[in-house]
Length: 166
Image (cartoon, rainbow, N blue to C red; front, side):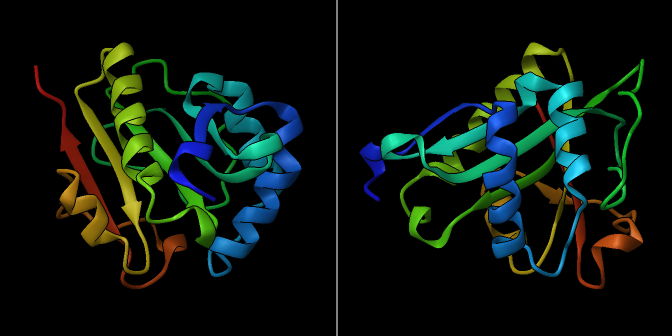
């Protein structure tokens, strides 16, 4: 897939089966029930994005939502509702198929997620970096927090945050 052929658009309920397949392929060590992504889409549709190529084929997805500063929900956890007094934006998941990587789509979705946080008036963005992703997030201004990542993310996971400019 060429960079010009990929674009981010709002995720739709019809995208969920393909997103689930991508999640299993990209994050095999971090399984989540399909209901988790469906709930995030229902609770915060503006925070759920689909990376599509020609013919609207899904090449990746990103999921974010309002949350609490310095923390993230544990892996494979239904929220029930978003916090009434959110003070951070949580990037819950970003997954791109291998053929979609290296074309700027990941960097583009970071910008889209930061913009969502700003639209919600949230001063911070939080996430958990798994595997070797911490370097990517550092390049985008995220720094590790002293608090540990929730246990469900496994050893080596890093809770990270980035303050938004005032």
